[in-house]
Length: 143
Image 1 (tube, one colour):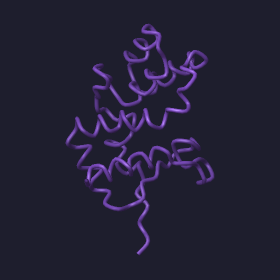
Image 2: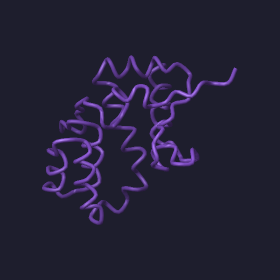
Image 3: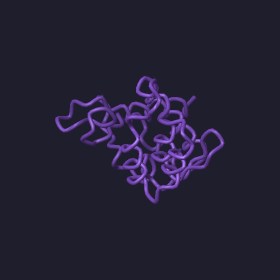
């Protein structure tokens, strides 16, 4: 039997980087995974604090974009691991997130989003790195 596709959108309330689950990562509390992820791009404490205190996940992303030219030179090579580590922290800190991930069973988790890196892109051929990260975390959860 072929695995079903499990859209990340189905559980966006739990698995999205924009969901309203605060996360403590490396001793700092962030309102969302999105806030935490973008703060990891930079070493400048003022930039990090501006992102961390942004009033929404979308604003955290937008704030990060204006400083992107100043991001750590090795960040792109590490960004999947950074996102996975932050999502792991979210998973460990929230029972409802663990339950939602467990509910996905063996289904393929797909981030149905136009971003061709984190999602499946506009043509459905994107890398789906967010979905892959959640599937790896689901395997860890089962162990």
